[in-house]
Amino acid sequence: MAIADVSTRSVAELISLAGRTAVVTGGAQGLGRAIARRLAEAGAAVVIGDRNVELAHTAAAELGQSGGQVIATGMDVSDPQSVAAAAALAVERFGGLDIWVNNAGVYPNIPLLEMTEQVWDQVMDVNLKGVFLGAQTAARKMIAGGRGGVIVNVVSTAGFRGVAPGVSAYVASKHGVRGATRQMALELAPHDIRVLGVAPTFCETEGNMAALAALAERDVGAEIPATLTSLLGRVGVPDDIGRVVLFCASDLSIFMTGSTLLADAGETI
Image (cartoon, rainbow, N blue to C red; front, side, top):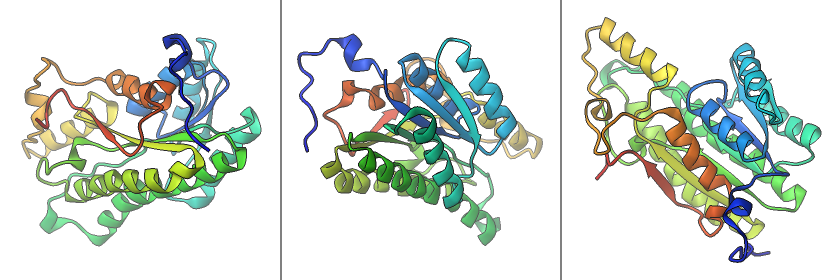
């Protein structure tokens, strides 16, 4: 098997996801919802997986109003059975699985000297093990389908550097996801499965804004550099990341695998 040469295709053909099925974990709000919206707009049938089932169904219904095929399911990315059920649903409802976006994550802010083993394990279970389970499950379905696919792991600028105090578990998990992306790309290439990472800077999502508010209440004085300055003049919004994930999922990036694309407004320069 080999990745196709798409040199003769038009830009419209390259960006189109018509006939493909995508699963987006943590897709009910924030980055995940923006990603799901762009994938659906490009023609993919989308399964939104999220622990918040009600919010996931609301997101699916709203995105579906634009004419896309979007459904929702409850999903805990740290639970193998839950991940398997979401993948099986995608195949059952839409006939296959072509794109899997590992977006779900948690971001507790607890100083290293105060962090419990339980919290550390929770972050690793969701942010790192969840990526492993999602990628493994998706790859097995893609191989069975015989048409390859794309796995996109949402990393973070925290996968490239240390960031604000209190996020040691998060930084460790995201460094792990970045490394896993490279190794997964190596092992899955023979099956025509590409694996790419997208590393956002701080974006104005519901979760991030709530975290900042909680820090302010604790009088911690959160210092997230990207909230204070950006080389491009503003803080990120979810669709800034949704568009990059669409690029990764589409044939525009068909000759790329193993890379993690920084979507950081220059933060890591």
